[in-house]
Image (cartoon, rainbow, N blue to C red):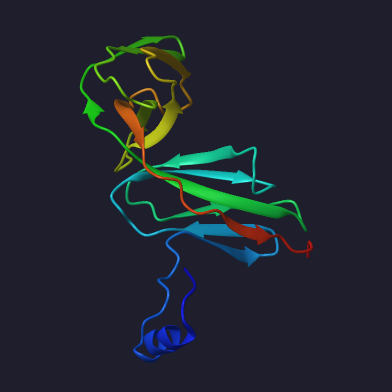
Length: 178
């Protein structure tokens, strides 16, 4: 339904305007993009593509209360499209790690019927929070990680992964190298 010009003028005169976008991409240098979104108590999966139709590549799963992501050192004069997707899920206490050499293998029981997968999170020694480290497919009940130096005494947790709606796609084209 088309908006009548008189109604639009009346809304603008009354101080009504379009809401600020909730997901933004800002070119901070010719080859760096910073993505931002409001804190919504969920974790966020950040993806990019060089075409708005994809294919999409996951850049990172970010923990709850993270509200930005820096995508640095990009190819000059190239279009980059971004989207983000919130995720949530209950934390499971049923995680069984077995360390052998420099590898830790995790097993758990799948007690959810509708997860999009499982998210393994790590809290490295001295770190205040957990960070996502591994994502599995739905109905998987095991995964293994190679330990990096300093991760030997880390804490781990698992959550059944549930995604929220995808954000609108945002776009930046990088500039020329300096």
